[in-house]
Length: 240
Image (cartoon, rainbow, N blue to C red; front, top):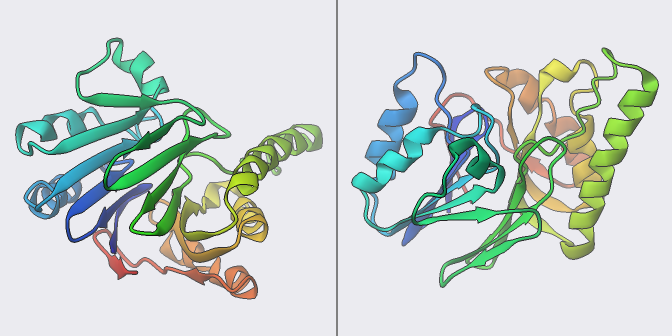
């Protein structure tokens, strides 16, 4: 499987007979994302799964619905909150709420919770487990809010992680926020996540263009015997 960093929280997973794109989002004034999807996914053989974890514009782009004009075998798995934004149910779209499951002959997707809106995704394909957090993170903002508020945010996050941990004892790849906007403790949620759920490989996301700050998580992950992918640019690939 080949994992490609598209931008922000957008990633693509390419297999020999199908592909998956999660949380497609375009950087303002950039054409790279659109060009990459058209050249690498819409012309790629096999089924394409399109996943969006929630309706925030940095995780969901309505442009994804235009892709079905160019690719016949395409399936949309979207967080149920996107239905509220779209106002009406689209055909050939499956909406997932927390703990809902989609399964077919190629993949299994289970939606877990978030500490914002929407869901996170556990994807099982070809005997491996991949987790995309969406906006599930310890959004503590402890340098901007009261200690009590920060503790509340952390408690909510840990409850969601515990729910996942009760059902999932190991993850092959976790795609998870490392967001420097949180201040000095910006890696706290990621640290708590891989401390609770053993993870082989960790991919930072939600870091904008702060590549070095995202890569800094490797120092902690090494202690947990977890490898961190160090992205260098949009379109960067990693083969698992």
